[in-house]
Image (cartoon, rainbow, N blue to C red; front, side):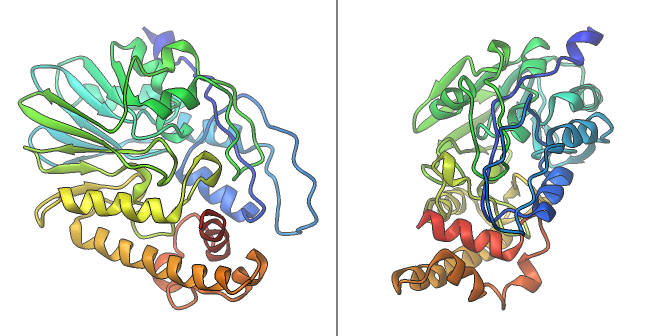
Amino acid sequence: MKTRREFLIRSSMATAAAWLTRGDLLALAGQNAATGVGQAPAAANTDPAVQPNPDIAQQLRTAAANEKIKTTKLTDTIFLLQGVGGNVVCQIGPDGKVLIDSQISTGTPHLLDALAKLDEHKLKLLINTHWHFDHTDGNAAIHLEGAFIVAHDNTRARLEKPQVMQMYQAHFNAAPDAGLPQQTFGEIETLWVNNDQLNLVHTPEAHTDSDIFIHFVRGNVIHAGDLWFNGMYPLIDTGSGGTINGMIRGVDQVLQAADERSKIVPGHGPLGDKGALQRYREMLVTVADRVEKLKVSGKSVQDAVAAAPTADLDAVWAKGTLKPGTFVALVYESL
């Protein structure tokens, strides 16, 4: 059992972006926790702000191996677990534990220990919000603990092949068979588990092309995945089909499912509610409109970044992993 818990997944992900600075990489290391087995050769560039970090994967593995999981009770049966990587939600009950996302493989022993403290039932189901490593790298270890994995069609399609995210200049191999979803779906899937209805809803061309959010209808809890980076500028993975307008549409879908009493879990950041998500949406729309006007007027991405269209927003939203210029460049690229 010990070796199974320490099983390291060879996840499939990577990235390279002309506007991600070394500071962004190190911030992501502390919050998004990646894994992988190797780095792609860095693309030649003349931008002194671009500082590839060949040690990023090992830094993230080390961080997850030493993490401490924070557990927050959302309802009598639904809990938020936060550590290195994406936020995790666990539902407990007689049908067995349902887990939303699996974080990082090196942190799996800590996650399993935290889950064991919730109740005596075994893991039954793992649902991935999307394909990114900080949400799926623990898949194989969780599957070997007994969980059946469900995700969007595109999550499996990306995990089963090597991927290159255009944000890191790093390459990661395909996930092992044990880390691949055993069941996938297209637009919406409905499950009934532990006396609750779970709606799994796809949001196309959002953070990636594989994003879903999960609505626990009776519990009135929504895991929004990386549609929502609470309190910060979000990462848009344009190399995986992500777009700013798709992000906005995805957030609108979550808002439509929520009410004023809903507890909404972001992919990263603190627990939130409908009001906080609405303010995030307003920021996304504002930045998208401003950057689109610059692009339509013929401004280059460098010009758009230099124009600082987020300057009046930075005091509130530039406290996360991405610097304003990085976010502006991603929005520009995705329009």
